Amino acid sequence: ARAVAAWCDDIVRRVRSGSTLRHAMLEVPTDPATALATSPLRLAIERGVSIPDAVDRLADAGPHVRLAVGVLAASSRIGGPSAAAIDRTATVLRQRAADLDERSTLAAQARLSTHVMTAVPLLMLTLLVATDDDARSVAVSPTGVMCIAVGLMLNAAGWLWMRRIIRTPT
Image 1 (cartoon, rainbow, N blue to C red):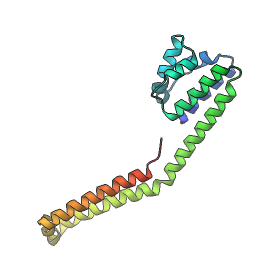
Image 2: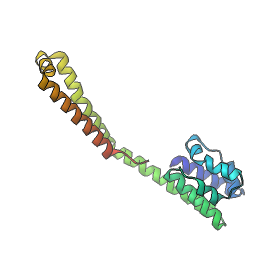
Image 3: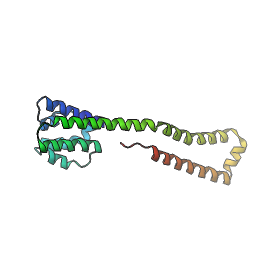
Image 4: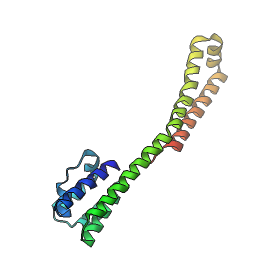
């Protein structure tokens, strides 16, 4: 979202300095984060396709790029001063990035707990098997192997479940 917001800011700067929207989109240097998503758009515009038609051809863009190019297409269709609309789009994208950062920060404790709850049982099992003869004899018995296998499966299921709960959308 931040990279697309920066891309929009660059377009706004060029439009406000007198470039047309078409030329601004072609002249704006793209960073690697947006280059892959916007290269089909730039290529179509270079070949003479109108901005709205080029946007319609853009299929594999993420939600942030789709928002930005949708505003660019609408600005191109409607005409008039487009810098304000694109600038507001960049503001929305920066807010989205801030929201994603906040979600990630709020999920940090859960991520740490997931790592601890996954690693501690494995480390304790390894430590007990390495140092205690009784634990080693139980671990190699059929019942012990079955208990360890079930525990590992439950540990893996818990780790996957916690990852699903705390994942942050992009």
